[in-house]
Length: 95
Image (cartoon, helix red, strand yellow):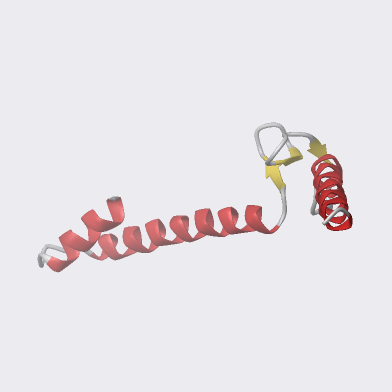
């Protein structure tokens, strides 16, 4: 919203050099936020500055630094996949 205000001020002809600096700062902040969101999508681990630890963004468990996946969620995901495969196999056997 503030970026749009700066763009409006610049386009109205009442711009100051500082408006360009502010606009660049708002764009940089938006880029960092988007990068963090995309980083969360690639792995389920993120760094919590408040608690100074790495955590799983799905379950909140503490994760070892450098790990990309939560062992707890990964295990649950594997177990779910195994159950789905077993169900599929069982259905095919009796068809």
